[in-house]
Length: 298
Image (cartoon, rainbow, N blue to C red; front, side, top):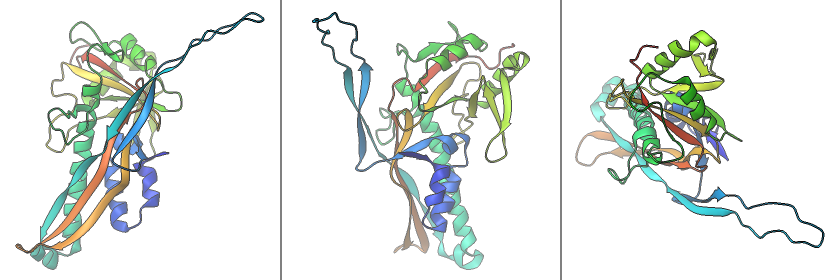
């Protein structure tokens, strides 16, 4: 069973844990991405690669022997978080709110960093982090599509092909793109009525293309653009979120521990840690469209 962070709020055991989960779920991506609770330090599963043959037989005849092909897959949990150190004098003079702000800032940074890793994570460069979608869907993959031979205005037919190649049986499809690409898509598709604007559970506007909600990713915790570092050459992703599709994984949820005062400095230490990761259970639960120029005229 997989739950979104919004659903996890209902099971928070302390006000502090509730505040942390609420801040993590503040982003568009993290509010809808489900997290599958697992035991141990990783998830292991069999991915269906091909189905067995079927057919008919005559009386007294036999059916051809055939088997489904599966591959063993695994995804390990990563240790994600940080320590917040607040001078004891700040708490004494300004109250507990000053410390609470520091904890909230740390969690906000975790959310923005997680959103960046969701796309750009690379365990070859940093073994302690998980691989993002860009690393998982590379050129030559059946889920890798080119908008054009080189960067060009978004092709709606290619976007439709991207969406069609994502398996959403039992899951929910989403388009993930930068704000600049979202504006480009909106200008391109508004004329033929393929853009819909609704309200999400927070009351914010939610754009959808052909019934598929659009999620925007902006910048990470270091103010670096996640998807549009080069607005003239970007990627668009289509994903299907679900426990058996594309899902986050975690063991125990986000932990917040008060470690007390440091022995060598007058600082109060709070540790926020999350054993989490990303698992692409169904190989067709995500697809990538490259060579999108959001600055091109439409």
